[in-house]
Length: 550
Length: 65
Image (cartoon, rainbow over all chains, first blue to last red):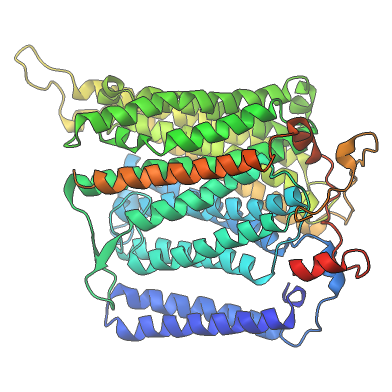
């Protein structure tokens, strides 16, 4: 991998890593006894390990110029492996916290193992570690292919990928030490946030530079989805994390906003994180990998573009539906609710478009578990977006909010839609990237598919039942006008569903481990093969495109 | 709710950015050939346009490095 970098890039990498090591050293030295010092050592170790890896290859000969005739896939490959490692870790912690709710003793009396500390390790681990790495890796793949251009440099993709993983490590280790700013999906403290801004700006610049070099006049719709993910997440991240550090040598900071103002900012961020981190980037995967895998163009390309602009203009307004019946002004709640319902139109247009793409190729869906992963992803995307619009309606929200129904809704989206499209895309792209004949075992892909689907269905049904029972028990009154059930009564009622949920999650974790094993075995044991691709001669589309600049 | 004085302009600004990008994409002729655009990704030779050959693409190479 190092020998594919130019000598100048290797030197720059060592300089950057040296500077990063110094930052880590300063953090470790200046934070007297504060947990930030531990983070300093983690940064130092991270930089040192990479420094020696690069240093080992520093005297390798300059790579041949012919490297420019191929796509630069090294960061994509590492990103896929990292995504799967995070998937296994994040889902394991998820099963653990699910089990903690059913059997609270599993905490083992540690301060670090409380539900409040482990839960963000799960959420950040799967959303950012698994989802984020999958987004970055596949975006590098897709932006090059659809632009027919190589990444502009070899250094910045590595900076983006590894810098993002450093952020994830800082985040997860911080939660265990109790470092959190208590904002959902934005828990890391100020120094991690600043680091992510740097990484993210470079990611955006890298994306724009690749598109600017494209040899294909049209920017494929997947790139628009990825770009909206990169751009909007940057904006959300910066404004939601505006905070004043109590001291520059300690982790603690105070939010720039307070009370309901802070809540509004948080959920403006929170729902847009669902929109632009957990939706648009994965729609990009859907719009690229599903047509590629099915070998059919998207059913209506026009509709895919309309859905994109619909999602972009509607999504940004929906965050306030998380704050129904709070101190937020009613008109702001109503605004969020209205836009949430309107969102159903572009969402279902997308889900329908995906399924119509497969219409006429159902025999492929039947035979190919990879394509079936993507199909189920599209189905769950349709289900979840319908459920989301429904739950955002104020009277429905009165029943569902603060109950497990929300948890069920989120997991229908993250397990059924996001994870399925990731796994489908990974199974499609791994043999292409590593130039392998096939996956190591299609039987294991099939097993993974059914185990993951069973896990998702068990999870979601358990949470629907649990959440609706919980909500109904909370609002049941006696004839005397007092509450009929105590809080503990609801816990007793939910206990069986918590066990079912932990079991469903365990199935999903087993599926992820199977996927990881299958990918590793594909890389190690499947023979090398140039992928066979048809070059059509009848279509104009097969003609080489002119560089966009000309 | 002073926060709305920040969040609403910010959301409108992002909408404006999106709208500008949309107008650019229409003006640039991005939507002239939607059928071809949808199909071209399927005919991917899995290699970028050659850049290392010095003769044919010398000018391009200079600007693209």
